[in-house]
Length: 491
Image 1 (cartoon, one colour):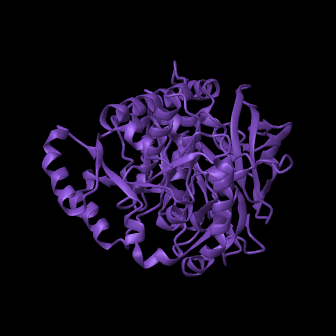
Image 2 (cartoon, helix red, strand yellow; image 1 turned 180 degrees about the horizontal axis):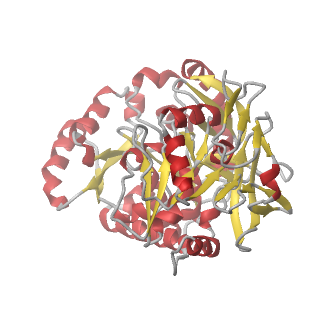
């Protein structure tokens, strides 16, 4: 079995995902065969990964974070890198994905009872993910200090103690109270968990890191734990794919650019990292529009992203008045792209006769495409190679969706996927729907598409930008952390 080290945070969104990706890239640059692992993730930003030994079903779902971390390691993503994925569908319930496949749905209270059974899958994947590797870097979820959930924990100390993986604690200084959060974690952890922690690091420091020297002394007084370093604010992280819906609260409009792209922030928004390659274009401004705010009148393009609950989000779309904003946008000659759930919303009707998504069995669509969607229990999950029909350019991406869409506008498909027509285009060519996630990641297509909207010279090498960002983060971590000590403590 490979050696392993785990990063756990004093809370959610302390930057563990980026730190694990950076450490994975740093280890790879040292010549180590390294893999990522996250026992349990909660996110509607999913990626399609290989299911080792299964050549017939296309692939399975993992969190987008582990897909990015696999890129940092230079290896194909596997479902075993994230054996349990929770995809929130309502405020109190989520779809449960186990080793890439839909396991069922669970309300939050029921899920706590389910965790005992899921630990077996976590440990099975754990035994597989390290095969042939020198090092596995594990990412926790939330905080180990949630002692009210400890008895059934599979994401933090419940896993670390079972798998005997040493833990580095991550504190986020940007949100304040970092000394109390590290010392408080030490205070309330039971001894069995506390002794798993080999030290801590401080993340997201702005300014002169020596100003925190006294803070390190204070933490040492309270905990006796070793400090592995203070990581500055990693600017390169902004060039990485968006991982978690937590960041949506901070995605604001930047400076005005040649093209404004408006993206309504659906309540169950999914795979919104589809927009990242557009955000990376110097001439494009992507604006995520929160509920209660109108779609900007100066947007040239509106993108309706994926959704984990199409009918629920469609009803909220109307409640927000975005349907009226979209009609005005169309009258002005504006363009619209709907991806996956967004594509389904653009049609005349969405029907869910088996109540797969919830109690509402049908809803009138936005009517911008002459199509209808019927939800079906069989889920399509696969990586695809495709070709854009209107721009005759190659595409690479993936599908994760329920339901099938039919109607007259599908006779104008937006893409050919594995020899089959996908999506629909309006008669005037300005409304495009597709089931394919990741289409904007194809540089050539993105350049041609933006050219059709009046933007010339677009089509940067997006994947190269992600690789460079990972290299830059790894270099920063080598500068500011004792990586020798962290890797040396893996066991």
